[in-house]
Length: 478
Image (cartoon, rainbow, N blue to C red; front, side, top):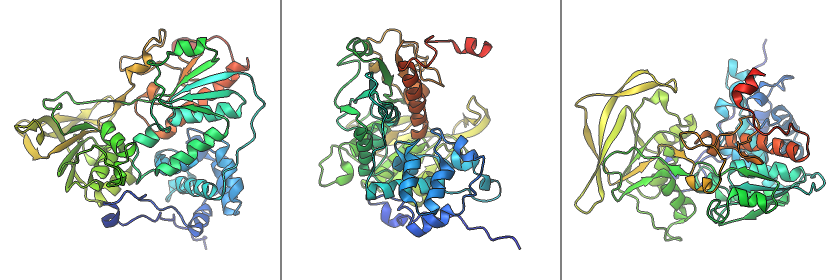
């Protein structure tokens, strides 16, 4: 008789009716018993495909094996061997499309909950004391890392462990980048981010805040002042808009502005903090990615009576994580599929009074592989709202390119960089994360930071081919 398989352990969560009015973390984390039970489900494959699905190549079977043996410290060390920010990744990384999608169990049943186990181990370490790993002897080399987001923190941490002197230059008054200003408290608590940043600092990384690249100094000036290499990890913080009439009315926000006011200006602690943020009675959020989910759920928690998500495609095309979309619907967010805004309407005082929309139907697939939405003639209608949040994606802020001659960009404003090494066309300058790819996931930015750190280390030690740039076509031909 075949052995009965252990079912995947469900993550405890706050009830929807409770969490929709507070900013406490929604997912509560595994208990010890649940974590040990879930760890037993891992088959400990000799050729683990899950590792191949991880952008930072976490030693997944090994850390899970240590966990099931109750070797918690060793499990944490195995995690930290590849991942400088495991408590963050365990909460916001889309494991379902990466490591868990490659799990052998996923062929016939639910995969091992790798992300939830990663969170458990990282939280255990944070509660029981973080140990600083050994570092290589000082190399005498100095690296400037621009941006304290996931790419920059990962790159800086890896380079510090290699023995290089690393200084992070961050434009805002708090480190963490999108981890701090973009992701709400109920999904990623600030104390978790602060603890992960402190770990990177404990490796010997210097952190300079309120330092804006392109305004205070250029990339060239940093190199001239003695830095041997520069890594650009400034992300993509410039919001995109639709270009429709009425977008300049009072009450129209970009999701970036709305979430930054809530996160960095602590609106989630109201009334303790008197944050200048007005939340409408009825709010429309345009878009259906993770940022749209974050913005809509934040608006609900700040007091909106109704929150509507307006999305021009169907449910099948929603780009947000399934878990986050389900959480939003459970909390009462109203979703309008196949609906596209065409104008923001205002009142006599210049404030939003309605969002004019048009019904859509799906046509042929576009370049993304998704069916292109096509307007339905005569289907316009007005949605009564008094606040609109545009969550349509972002691009790199052009300020970073000020006085940085030689830093080539794409027509969409992203830095041209080698995908394997992070090298840009400007010698001794690397780049990675959203500044190269456009808005993507935290873990993909971390993977880019890790690849760049490996190439920077090899370059500084003279171990890597010193031919600086090879066009991709030429590299493929050779």
